[in-house]
Image 1: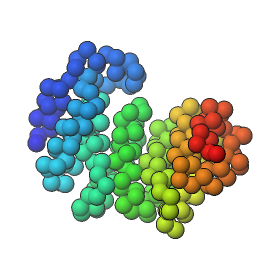
Image 2: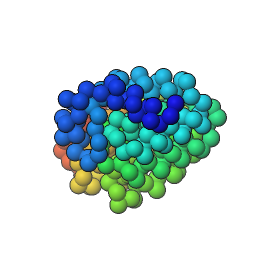
Image 3: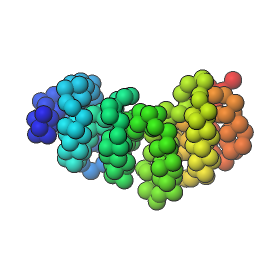
Amino acid sequence: MTPQAALDALRDRAEPERAAGVATYHKAERPYLGTPNPAINDLATQWRRALPLEERLSLAQALWASDIHEARIAAAKLLTQARIRPDDTAAWRMICDWVPDFDAWAIADHVCMAGQRRIMADLSRVAQVEGWTTSPHMWTRRAAMVITLGLTRGNHPTAAEATARDRVLGWAAGYVEDPEWFIQKSVAWWVRDLSKHDQPRARAFLDAHGDRMKAFARKEAGKYLR
């Protein structure tokens, strides 16, 4: 699968009348094809199953470099897999290299979904993400919360997972007075999802820090607390 063939496949499934609306919605200056997300997912799944890891990584990097909205989402989907064998650093390093390019939520979230799998495969990667929390780039700071969402899941975390939860909640505590809407939303998202599996930690966070959060974020974070 060459990068050009992959781009042609994305264009073949495009709905051009959608492109202008998607561009307006996401507001980031780049080309938009109008390819629906289900079609992108189908193509990426085919490529992920057909290509060995080295070729998949090469294709993902080429699609990312195109700066086409749908191609960047496909690049992220190529790396969204619970088990990558061998799970060396190549896929994780590529994901990290893309983070400074984030400028819109959809692409950022798809890349972070891929990153969530790599973090849950190796929790030592949380230490690297911690450095993102002080970045001047808002999307990098936000990515620290979104890429660690895998840690919110599970009713019976291991000791290492529980420690990682507390570590990320410490980052969130440092974010609660950040004026950026997307940062507030990321904290709310993390605590809300955590509350589905670990109400004591979610409640303790809101008891300690909720009064400093924006009202919408505080409400969202506590949505599932009883």
